[in-house]
Length: 223
Picture 1 (cartoon, rainbow, N blue to C red):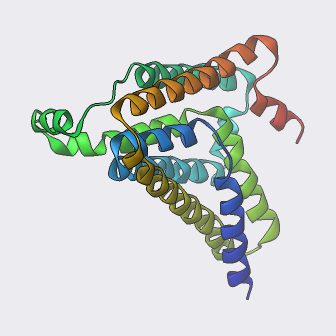
Picture 2 (cartoon, helix red, strand yellow):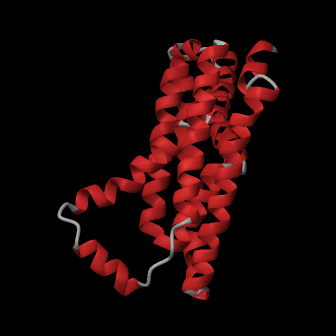
């Protein structure tokens, strides 16, 4: 009974978390619309892999290494730089027609690298966001305080991870269906808008360092 409770609660928790809008959400939608469902789903898998890595880190208490002010500032600067970098790249990205993309794909000598590019992007993109670290400390805290058995804690967390991945893939599918109604010009404009949003997110992470402590530091200090 408790196992079923842990699973259903994890699914509900995952659905709630999947509604949160951040840099990864905009990148996921943009990639699915401009690059297709497969590329978007690979990005989602990369994001999920980074989530698993962060759950593992938080589960074994390694996250304590990131609780110092200096470590959090370094993480915020690095994360902000990554977001700004992805933002600039995305903003300057011009959408290519299907014919141009086929020619470009044929030029790759190793298609495996091309296929895994979006998984690596999703992993780096998500794990470089400092707010994601505190994001995963919450369900870890809920799991350890609510369930006494390790198996129930694992079921709760795995349910969250699976739900988040399924939700991201669903977002990719919905976004991809919109592609048929868009021209190359509109898709290029979407790249510009998402790129600017990512730059704003990255700039915010860095600028807040000089105005107030990183948000994650404040949260940790208030525990």
